[in-house]
Length: 123
Image 1 (cartoon, rainbow, N blue to C red):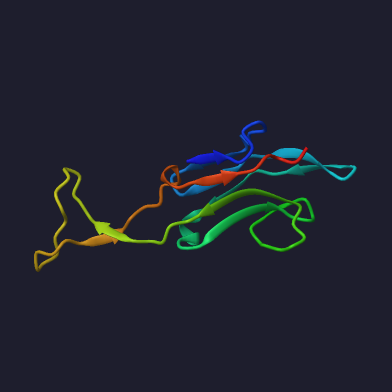
Image 2: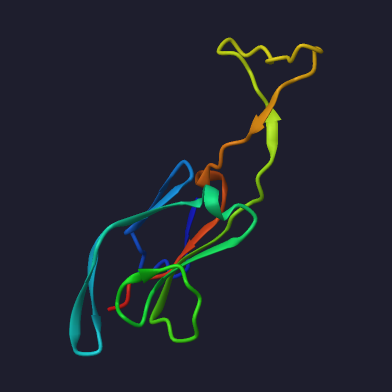
């Protein structure tokens, strides 16, 4: 779920669907220059058990690198660690192995169930 860190200046460019966080393209001023940021998506399955941060870098591009010289933080997610869940058939019955034990599969990441903190786009 998206949590606006400044409700008076909501950032509507950050969206989530399943395990994917997307930042839509936008323009902003960096000093006296008008910069264009292109749309970019990130599959946060790769970030399981870590903190994901999306920045505008000192070069005006989106980056996930944490450096003290970044221009602005746009989003932060404490991505939960991966875990397994029992597999089920379409009708909902558990999938069992040859010994009658449940087959375990990785649980999918759903960012609607995780706090996704977003900050305003710089003016």
